[in-house]
Length: 394
Image 1 (cartoon, rainbow, N blue to C red):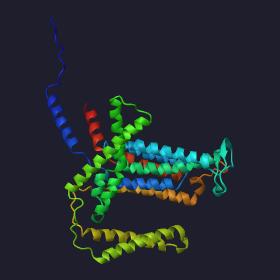
Image 2: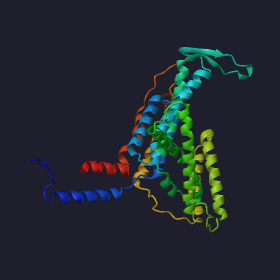
Image 3: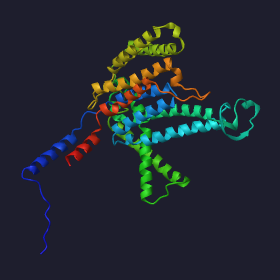
Image 4: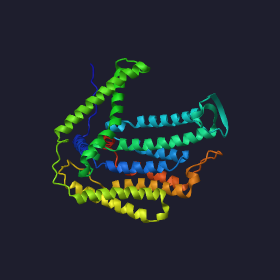
């Protein structure tokens, strides 16, 4: 006689608790918590980029890249634009390799420790000062690597902003006066992540069908479907925008000429104050006063110009105190980097002739810690929160 093993069931009353917990979990999954404002991520990333632009110290830039990548890996979502972080890192590595290769082939520096010698090709007289080949020194390669690492850090910071910020939510949070301009900017910013997503999806489909994954034929086989998919997405986006009223004649109540004059004068003040801060230090605090007044004038002008455009917003994204803290962390890191560049220039930009070992300053570690802090203080993505809660319920 065969006995059927019976799976032990829950205790009396336990099934109701489990069902109630499941209902509560599904209800929580349907109502995710508040997310970080997209422009707060852009403010944090711009602060990180400004900090990276002030130095070519490989130790500082390496720590900064580690902090930025850690934040991206901990706070990115499963959206299409959040899958392009690997492409940005690959592009940054290509930039470093290309910069070092150019220095080795076309560099003019011959001083320092010679590592190897390339065959030198003589150039005509009109190309004086440029050489092709010849001795390659460690000093020249290190200088090129430092510059390439700085440029790669800038690219990774911009890629982090594209990965973490939701472009659709960013479009909802711009002033009404910049509505049409913001549509074009958001579409341009979302182009690279969409192309990366199309490339990954088409390559995965080709592998499942047994197609070749390497070689020039694979590149040609992937390029046409990627471009076709990008064109198809553009057409669908244009149709969706047209159905929702984008591109129609703006119902304007007339913009007064004082508003236009205020915007023009404020923009001119921004240009003059920026130029004065960079090239005319003898003016003292006057450029700072003009810069502050110009910023206030631009904000007031955009507010007044936005009142003449009638536009509605569906579920606008609110700015919360955590968003202010996030932007403050990026601005604080940039301020520390600028202070280090002014008072400790040799630490921020180590010399390569003669060779010097890069050094770290305590303020560098503080700036890196400020940039890494959003990985712990910002709310996690809603999709990952739901996944963690499901694992905990099991």
